[in-house]
Length: 135
Image 1 (cartoon, rainbow, N blue to C red):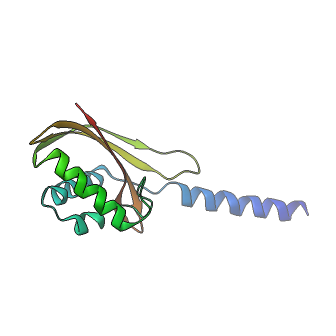
Image 2 (image 1 turned 30 degrees about the vertical axis):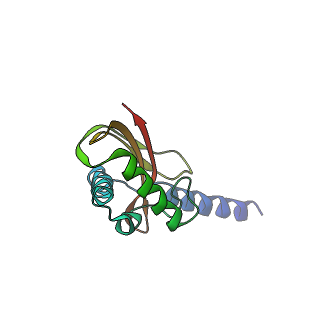
Image 3 (image 1 turned 45 degrees about the horizontal axis):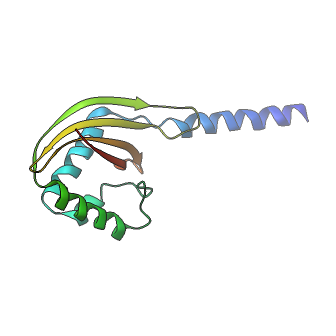
């Protein structure tokens, strides 16, 4: 009985170790964010929706996400320039790893501070969350 429990515990540790930490790299995370912002600026909302996570924060469907993107673009105006302010890799035991990227984004109507959480899903970098505040 004792060896049986040890085997199960060993298997669980291996599974948890392998599944928890998906190695993330900064450059692909940045590329995902910057491509997403570029597509929003070009009003290519369908294509932009391909870069968001299946669990994109606050949306229950692709159509809802596109509706939010459209409203966002109307309010902010065209993209003039962007600057990466900070990047932080967040890795926690038994949790999904993600990059938090914070940009200063100059739009025609306003300058914003935009935070992105970027995750890796099925080998692709996806936007999990996009939060905007006025600068």
